[in-house]
Image 1: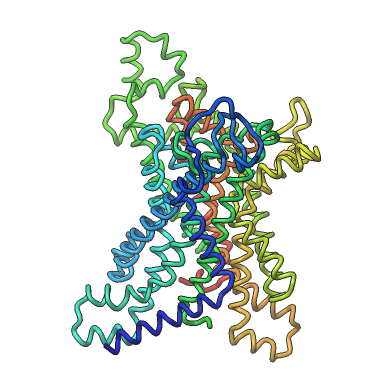
Image 2 (image 1 turned 45 degrees about the vertical axis):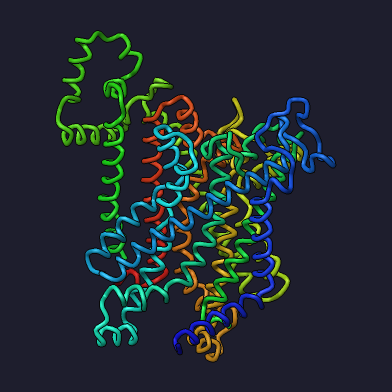
Length: 287
Length: 320
């Protein structure tokens, strides 16, 4: 009972700290707004983001088409809303995957130490030298362009950071008196690992994951821009900008790249503020 | 220090071998006749079946895998990376023409980006909680949040199309002078675009590490000794703050090398990224594989250099 109370007061303190940080709260509100708008896209816009309407080509922004239409007559605002679904989905699921994989390997490396640790660290160092853009180029010819492939590559190339964070934390936690007392009390290794060490590593990992969401959304945009991302039939923020590659389109239809670019910028900015607020709130040394 | 450098260089060898082994196995698993990749596709087209078999025998393509790997490794060290089916050139020659451009772009972006990022971060930490700090922090937050190719498009429109100060793309003037200063004009926008992410990330990181370091006891000691504020900040604070910052530089290098594909695409810059993209469209997979692996090797080398620079700053690392 006492333990429960202790925990909830810690949560409360973190929450208080988070809500005192104005930028973090604004960030959180923006994240919620964006996610909400993307999920409820059909309620916000009547247009189908993939339907081709030849007569409506390249319309300027108006009351019907808030951000105008693209070269094949698709409503840009609708494409941004529906595109956000996929971009955010890719960002979030890659971040969860990379964090999970990094947590598992980080725990194993830190807990067992010695040879296991050295092998895992070597593997991580080796994997981390492959730029994800280039790996995707390697894999695309064999499996084609798809959303799961992209998420897979993002996970493979970025589990290193959470792994290093967790490994470092566990290595230092191992020396702490409270872990020693657990051992002295005969608590099993697994239980020490999952009940006593893991909860103490989660703060920085959650922060890393939230910032990773931002990073993956940016990577997706870059890859889709050069035509290596998600198939063109699926709207994503990057795919919308992909249409604005020629100089004349860049100049004549600015909404095509400015609007999704701003959408990415604002969303990623919001996540960054949110993540920074989270870091301060979860870090017991800052007040 | 020399011992540390040597140890770092020796540690490179197994990693480079691992990269080459992966590349070899992937190439070996590709469908089709390996002879098409071992010789000029034009010559290959003129061969009879009998001659093909003789060539296979002569080139050792029928030998067991480990022997073929060693042969292939020997060829690579001589600059023979096999032939491209789409351009009918040796991939080694293609790389020799393109790779220096990408290396030039990536290295300059890393160097300029690190310098500016660390400088701005340092300034922000010295002028903590003033308008300078807030302004710089705002810029850095925007810099990490907006995709770099978006800045690329904006720069392209502003500096090349509207103001006409700089060329819209390419690498050098056709038939013009090829010395460094003439070529540099073509690199300014790509370097700006490429280094923005690094500048922004390093600025944030340098600022927070500096503030952390400046709170330490030894800084108080230095101050109470009566040292000048600038000496304390720079010699005692900055040098110690640099160690974690260099780690971030190291972690960002793969992003810069990978990101060059995107930047090259915005500015039509004829580096390896453009080369791989063209090859990919033509279905010429060996070119993509070789480029990826060579880029990974380059990333590895660049990271090692950063490691060595970090060790120069931190005597503790050298001792380990």
